[in-house]
Image 1 (cartoon, one colour):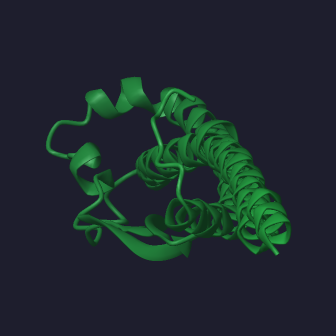
Image 2: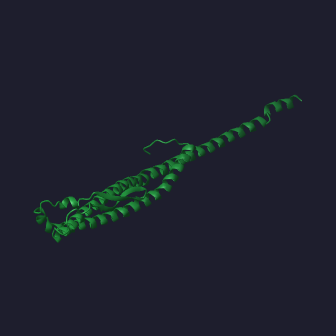
Image 3: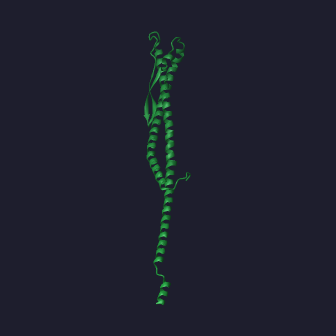
Length: 219
């Protein structure tokens, strides 16, 4: 193994505990990854819709842009600019992202009777452009935040699946083999010690043949 480990029972327990945590946490990470991937796809689709609305509004406004330029004193672009963009917050898989709600525009301050009807239409189209642009910007920000979080989750999933869990499994395998070898060696040593002890006990308890023979001869 690339990382040196202690071949002890406490280390074996530590590695098993770590493996248990990894295996419990990994499914939650994968679920979060799945939720983020689904939401990112939804945001991409919503962005395409908003961008299409932006293009359509731009095409409609293009018909009035030239004639509006000739109407000095009527600042349609100012009236079509959003005073503020209202957003809400949505929690997706533990991360808060902005959600477009509406674009607020200033009140109309020109005479509806003194201006031709197409001015109202041009103003509405230009506001549609700014509204769609604001929504696209919020969606892009939303996607950026979600994608950043998704990248982090994918990195963690890969870390657990490809590095941490295999490392823990290998460490457990190596430690168990070492402890097994130690146990086998200890049993072997115990058998040898027992055999030596039995041999020594047998030698002490046996009669001394030479001495008994001499005593018999003397008698």
